[in-house]
Amino acid sequence: MSTDKNIEIMDNPETAPSKKRSQLYDIWRRFSKSKTAMLGLFIMVVLILLALTADIIAPGDERRPGYDIQNLQNTFQPPSLEHPFGTDNFGRDIFARVAHGSRISLQVGLVVVSISMFAGVALGAVSGFFSGFVDNFIMRTVDILLAIPNILLAIAIASALRPGLGSVMIAVGISAISGYARIVRASVLSLREQEFIEAARSVGASNFRIITKHILPNCMAPIIVQATMGMASAISVAAALSFIGIGIQPPTPEWGAMLAESRRFIRDHWHMVMFPGVAIALIIFALNMMGDGLRDAFDPRLKK
Image 1 (spheres, helix red, strand yellow):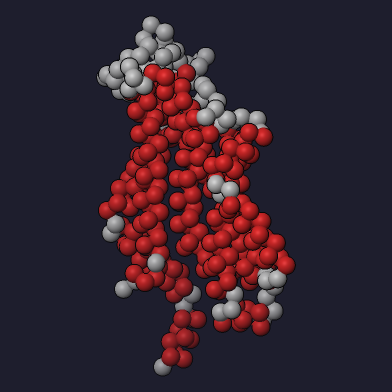
Image 2: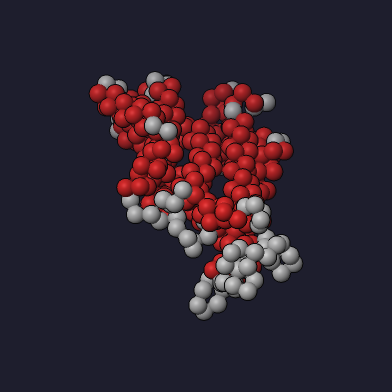
């Protein structure tokens, strides 16, 4: 009976894709059951739409972009219908700067996660698959990076480079590599002795093919969760670097730089600090809630 079923599966190539679709559906169903995760997803969708439509809702002119149009006769205005978030000390619209700043924060998060994920996954996979000197060398290097707090390592790297967007992304990306390497190595160690890996070796599959085709696809769940959490951490560290003056420089509307510019006016003009601060808190909250939801959704113990 089981033989007939196996033959039927082999004869029907649509079985595997439908199984994959059902797995994705189960993950989405478990994710959607979490109210906090769905709230985080909603906030992220709103912020992404804000970033995509920034040029429409806050257009500029032929001389300056929308976030940098100054009006010195309209400085320190409180929130109003004309300026929903008020204006700053140069008369610039804070809503426009927050909207355009969402592009910077999302770009930093995506690029940093890409840098740290690809480098960390490669190091973790090689370290976990090959034992001996290779594993010891990679892991001791990762341990050195883990011994230094991410923010201090990012400050050291950013200080050695020219201040700017590229320097921030490189600095924060390098500081986050160790987390991915550790997670992937632990997953690879638990997978490399499995029977399907032995079967792949027995048919002559190369180490590269075994790692890329058989091991890494089975490590995607913790990598995706780490990437979501890592994006929140990257945005937070990038904002901190800009706040202390070694990250993204004014007049670029980065939320951390906006906080640094407005901190001297916090007593008399609260709106200059509140809105970029709330924007940072919202995006970090949303990504962390999504990460928690994804971790629960990928947890096989929750499957029914």
